[in-house]
Length: 116
Image (cartoon, rainbow, N blue to C red; front, top):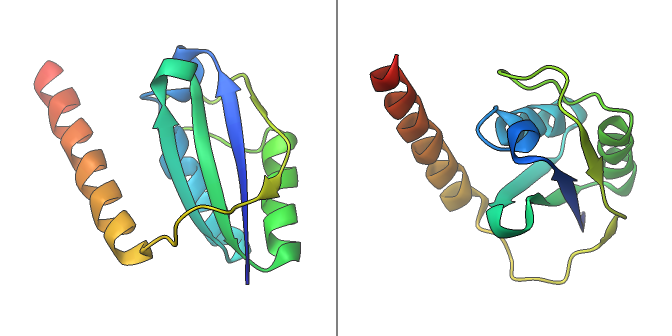
């Protein structure tokens, strides 16, 4: 198992509040890897850590480069991934990350439903 890291840059309207991170996680699931996606709002980018086999991570990364991330609210998002690098950060507790991610997404859903 290897861990790789890269960033996705783009305009706020293309990568924030459009379902981009859930789409990344779903795409990772399709190729059998774990994906940790974190918004870095001050820099207009998403930090992505992918964990799995080298081949599966490269397949995931290539799909992103080929613009195969389809978001819920913006199917034509304009974005660019940075280079793929080794991840040397702290170990990720995937159970805690998944619980926090689900809670954050539910919170957004509740906010958006009140606005409608």
